[in-house]
Amino acid sequence: MRKILIPILLASGLTMAGGDESAADNYCHDQAAWDKIDALLKRFPHDHLVIRAYATRLGICRLIDEKKISLEDGIQMFDIERQRAVMERSMEDAARRRYKPLSKDDLEPVS
Image 1 (cartoon, rainbow, N blue to C red):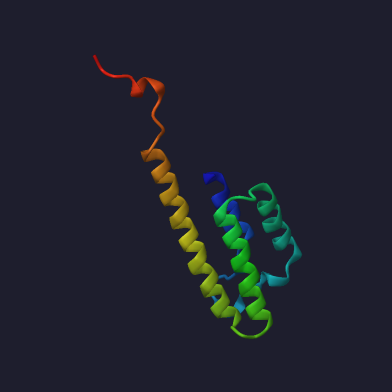
Image 2: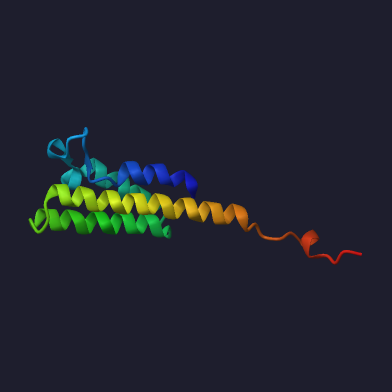
């Protein structure tokens, strides 16, 4: 599961800004970017972070297209959600490492 974190970040971004948000490219209408996140969703259809990234992208792009929010606000919202997903996946990985299932030998009474 950890391996998909980087593809999520690469495939689901709304923009690429070179430090200047006003020069950001809007990827809401970039078919290649949509193809990448569609492929991720097909590959990991039950991963809640992939589903959430896809839904977030759909919603934010719709709001940008309807001019209900600016591109800059959409970038900021998406970046916050992306950071939240990174933290959530990191916590899941840490919990998985910390709470390994007990083996049969671990359950045997000590004499």
